[in-house]
Length: 336
Image (cartoon, rainbow, N blue to C red; front, top):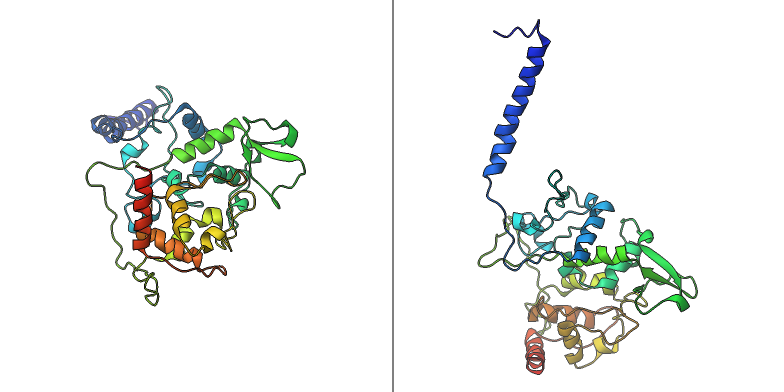
C-alpha cells in the first residue's frame, strides 16, 4: 500500500502524522483532562515587588543551585512542614503569555539548601542582603557566588534615610566613610525570598514517609531542667546559628554576640526568653530579630536557651519548659 522505499514524501508524511498522533495521545489529551489546580485558602498572591523578585530569581540563575520542592521522604522534613503539592506553585506558575509558560522553580539539585520555606526559616531582611552581597559574611563555608552588582557603594554623607544600608563589615568590606546600599533589584529579590513560606493546609496535611530508623535525641538527664528536652545544640544550629554563628560570636555590626552577653548570662532567664518569644529591635546597630513564639514550643525554647547559657564559656543556670511556659503566659497577658 505504501511504498516507503520509492516515495520519500509518503515516509515523511507518515512520520509527521505519527508524531502528531502520539503528541495528542500522550501530552495534549491527558493535560486537557487534568483537574485544574487552585490555590490554598490562605495562600497569598505575590505583591508587585515579590513578582519582580521572582523574575530576578530566574534571571540570576538561583534555580540552578536551589530547589523549591519538599519531597515526601522524611529527610526532607527539615525543608518544610509537609511535602509540596501542586497548589504551592499556583501563583508562581502563571503563564507569561499565550505562548510561554513561566519557568519551573522545582529545581533539579541542591547545591544550596531548598528554599521552599526560607521565608520562615530565615525571616531577617539584613541577613538575606548580606548573604547576597557576600555569602561568606554570614555562612563561612558557603560556596555560593556573590552578587555585588545588586548593591551600590555610597559615601557616608551621601546616604539618605530612604537608602537601605547593608551591615557588611570587615573583612568583607572596609572602605572608610563608605556604605553598602541595596539596590531596588536586591530588595525585590529579598522580598521574594521572604515570601517563600509554606501555607498551612486546612484539615489534615500530607505526611512524610517515615524512615526505617529515626534517632530521637534528648539531652542528658543529669540536670533536671534539661531532662527530656530536645537537643539544644541541634536546634540552635537550625534556628539561630545563621545569624549568631555556630561559635555564638555573631557578626559585628549585624548580629550580636551571645558570648558573655548580659542577657544570656543573667541569673534570671526572663529577658532572654522574652527576646526569643517577642523578637528584638531596640538597638539600631544590630539587625532586627524576629519573634519565635509561633514557631518554637516551650521545650524547644528551653533547650535553645540552655545551650546558649552553658556554651562558649557561659555558665548560667538552666531552665525548664515550665519556666518558659510561665514567661510565655505572662507575655500573653501583657500583650493580649
